[in-house]
Amino acid sequence: MKTTQELQTIAKQVRRDILRMTTAAKSGHPGGSLGTTDWMVAMQFNLMQHDPANFTMDGNGQDMLFVSQGHITPVIYSVMARRGYFPVSELATFRKFGTRLQGHPSTEHGLPGIRMASGSLGQGMSVGVGAALGKKMTGDNTLVYTLHGDGELQEGQIWEAAMFAGAKQVDNLISTIDYNHQQIDGTVEQVMNLGNLKAKFESFMWTVITIEDGNDMQQVLDGMAKAKSMTGKGKPVCVILQTQMGYGVDFMQNTNKYHGAVLSADDLPKALAQIPETELGDY
Picture 1 (cartoon, rainbow, N blue to C red):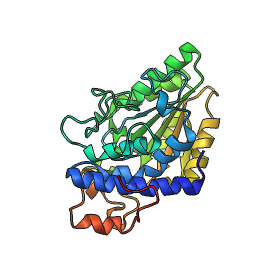
Picture 2 (spheres, rainbow, N blue to C red):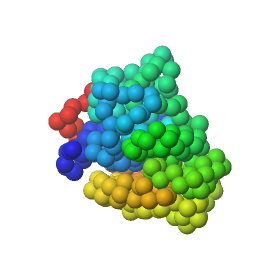
Picture 3 (cartoon, rainbow, N blue to C red):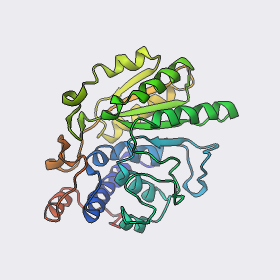
Picture 4 (tube, one colour):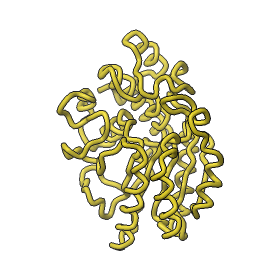
């Protein structure tokens, strides 16, 4: 287990990775990656029961994470590498043709830590529900986690899966919503307002908690620990994680500009200056 301060240090280095990876590739999705960094670090390093050295596709005896918003591969890959799933040096191959670190997660090359191809939005909750039911059928008491973008909740399949999970009491599932209010075409409120998310999930027979500041490491740790304590009680658990897209770089925060656009070579040093290199070192 890492201390909160150690996790914060890892998160800073991950944010540097994200900026350098996407700028070098001249493509990618840095905004949402920066916003979910604290959650991803907390999950992979402290909250999930998993062993990078003994990764298996079936996930037997280990917690499973399905990132439905698969376009945030910069944070997925950086945290996985820093956690030991593959060499940190491999981050330099991000989005290069034929490498394991594709723009969206792929199972084609057998990258440890990736159990599904994702990024075609709306599918991750269905996969998570199926995996959670599989664990119940085999008597596996570990948990299944999913992560979703708020804009992704405009996909109908999410709500079919949510209705099923509540009705069938899939209570070993925790689904987190990255609620940053931004999507590629504008704010979520402008594109298709989600209304009262808490009330919606509760009406589908879920337990719902909110993490008010998803970019505060301690709040993330406490909130997700609370979510874990609510499993096994007859209801799936939804976590509404309030984050800021682009968190960590002042001119990238709270705008959809960098949802799917990267920094210029001139802007990269300005951004990195706000996130000094840590003792972990750049790749």
